Image (cartoon, rainbow, N blue to C red; front, side, top):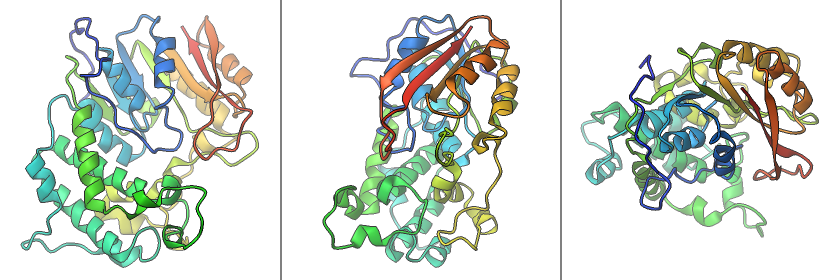
Length: 360
């Protein structure tokens, strides 16, 4: 899709308990617990069309869709984009129970690939689980609609995440799941629950998130400055660069899911020298402390005709003062709003606060 044009929806309320809810998320840096606060800050702005330029899980885009906005979602990671096709762009299509059941069956007429089984022995999952992943990703490809494929792919990704220590793929640590030790973190019950059960649970959650807000919404898999069209509002939640530690690199954290999203090309994309078989690194200005200021300036310049809203942390690079100054180059009125005390899962940073910088 290349247009987000559509007739403005009637004043609909998608916030009561009978309406679709975005699935629970285990994604690093997710705004799921902050999305209501974010919407409260945006609600007073006059906007109809909007772009979530670094969409991630899609939780903010989904909330904007529930508010009747015409939403464009974008993310550079293909696995996030594929999920957003089903959860954001999709207005009507669901996975039927019998389709979910068929996805869990090993078909006798299919010569299944064994790439995950052959490649990731003793890295993230057991041999049996790796074989199941190979089977399921191929079964998903037999579905008859791209949105069904997207919903099923989302369920597969969530099943993979929940069975991982720390919900990440940043190191080879399958042993953590089976170590006979007293645990102060993690959820061994979740780790031990079979993949098919988790897949069915997350497929049902994905179905419940699908709804029609009367608009033509869309999803993109582009660099943020390359997304077509103009928008009334652009919401920006870039990767976070802490001042005193390494940048957050989502591609490294979730490389296994990104590999699944291009299953046939995965062997050519792996960094075979790495112990945890990550993807070959790609340089990004959004995780480079020397380039990040210019990256923000280019983004603000690209969307200078739009209202801007930037989610960030108070101790990041650029600093909050620098971000305000950068935005003031293009917007005459800039406001910084603080959420206050908020700590992400696994974070040890008790000093940083969540901020939202709004330019109109």
